[in-house]
Image 1 (cartoon, helix red, strand yellow):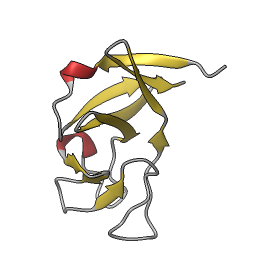
Image 2 (spheres, rainbow, N blue to C red; image 1 turned 180 degrees about the horizontal axis):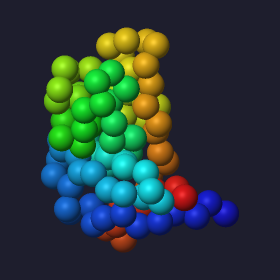
Image 3 (cartoon, rainbow, N blue to C red; image 1 turned 90 degrees about the vertical axis):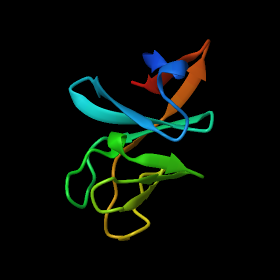
Length: 101
């Protein structure tokens, strides 16, 4: 059975926004895409910007530094197909955002 660990309350992450967390030594950005939650590595593969400071809309996370766009579920970069960030499996249970350990 998969083991999920709680990172935050769902209500702590505003719709359209992200928030950074440290999870087992890794910086992870968790996003609220109008009630759908997703998680990516917090570091943009292009210029190392903080993805958590960016925005999410319609399943796309946009880096605030240069506007590179990432698929919120897979981490694939839509701006440059050679780039990718780590994506994490997320679930929301009892109002808590949990990530697969």
